[in-house]
Length: 265
Image (cartoon, rainbow, N blue to C red):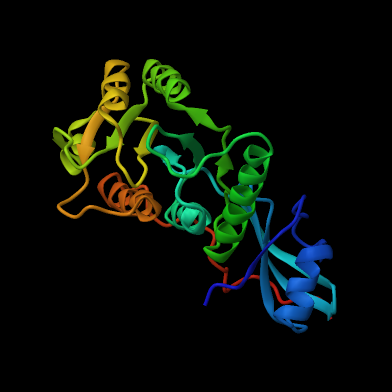
């Protein structure tokens, strides 16, 4: 079983000691009660991951020796999810599922038909909640890279973002139940790209005006499958399909090394 992953600002070199304190120390030492000799994993959320052996463990503080240390490259293509704001009870769930399925960036979108509205102080509060949800999900799924949470965009801002992405060579796909193209066909028929942007609409769907605006600047409206998915789960399903179709789900080299040296006594 893959050991638990904890966040640390800077991952030490092999042979050095990683210290977990604060929130991570309390989680490791008090909640999980890791013990001397057990293996844990630490990562900075920016691709550097180390497998470690616990040297000391107590409430609120754990020290572990770094046995192996790797820098994990980002998967290709890099995927941005533009997520229309779900209703409050499903908002963080959408972020969690997209993170677990491999999103590299998640951009909140105030779509025309969103019931939820981020205005004033709700904008910073909402982005903070999404950032915390992404971090927790990245740790739970043992991800080396934490997804970035972008700035809130409205529909005009999304059109500008899509235009910028398409000019840079990205493929932009809008998930839409009346999409003219099949998702799998759109992905496999395209030349290999470095970046993909997936647009997920609200529960009420993407409006005709939004579809027209997005397709005018280079997006393609695609249908993912025969079922109509909730906005909170659509991104994860699309990421799973994309992961298989583009082979971006090939395993990265972050598993425990059985030949790693034992911790010092």
